[in-house]
Length: 184
Length: 311
Image (cartoon, rainbow over all chains, first blue to last red; front, side):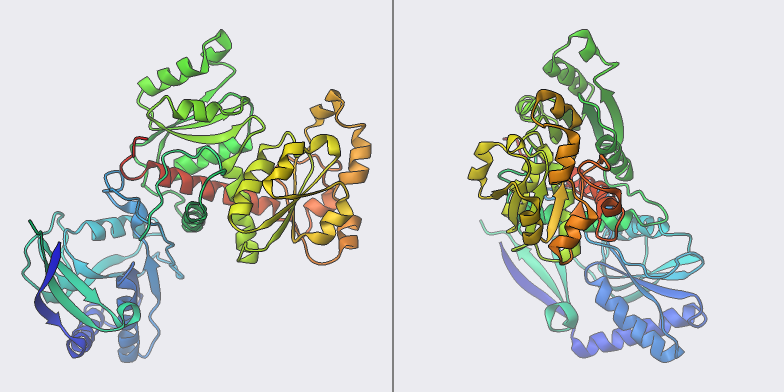
């Protein structure tokens, strides 16, 4: 299998602008920061949640609580998966009950991760509402789920892969669309 | 990522450091599940687990049952008394019948050593050994190791004293295999009649002097004295055992330093361990019980997931 970069979608400067816009949209839709909590979905939703929380805290002049969600135990493909996915811990260091929770993930694709995240979050309590913010919406949904805040909506083919690289994990900020080609 | 495959958990003998580490790391995540408002996750929905206990057990059975329920598995319990085993059916017949009822995972406790291995070769369900004779009790070994790792961080070079009736203890064997694999050092302590000769080949030290063992160790894992052994003539008297090998506060103080005190339960208070030790801050005995549920969740999760590789 070889990979071919089809398109550079976001570079470092673009990432900064996109996150600033998402932060502004999130706080606007919430009518301020009251009751707001961000929850990042492992893995790359977590650094995104931390950055968005900093941006929103900067606007609101108030700290926004951030949690980490591991959805492994809520996946719907667990018994079908070829490999057993590694379970990691969830860290929600605040009371979920009554909060306006914004779930943060890097890529919205089939919607199954978001579905699992809804199940997981509800086991921690009853928030007033849950919204979904994603950096990239690449289409091809298999569930009736849509992002409330979307960084960039792109057109992809089912075989494409969206690679989100973040400073905290990968050393640089960028999003690229990759095509994998099977060799004969 | 290099994933370790589990088809069965029959013992800690031969289980790699990577496999044990993966179970312990997963167990840490499950420990968090036990602290949630809703202590249940849907991972094993649709998975049928049968708990087959051919030997009486309270805490291991309850611990497995809780672990299964917290993973949303479907649980069936078979106890030897009250089932057709008491009507003369063989173990293989019993299990094949259970399998015909479409069971995915069998958790088995049996008085015969090797019973889980016998089953694992003959049925398609995954088999978890919940204790076979005096051979192994792998989930107990894992929960003991998890408790030590949480307490000290790194198992490499940790000095563990296993105290008591080594000869009849499956807990001792699983501890020895697992701890040595993880790089810990093990010393055994007990009366000569309760330490089998061949165990010295396992790369462990042996002493009959509790004070020597206590002075050496960081952790002391006290085994339950099976009182019935006294009738077999292996022990002169319980009082004499208590005087030589009972863990008391004064003995611990004499050894100096901070020791971690463990016991797999159920305890004979005043025989192998005194109450003022069992209930002291050095004791992690109740943490072991909590970790037991998390470790069993991890094993069930890892064994049920993915495609089974037919060996």
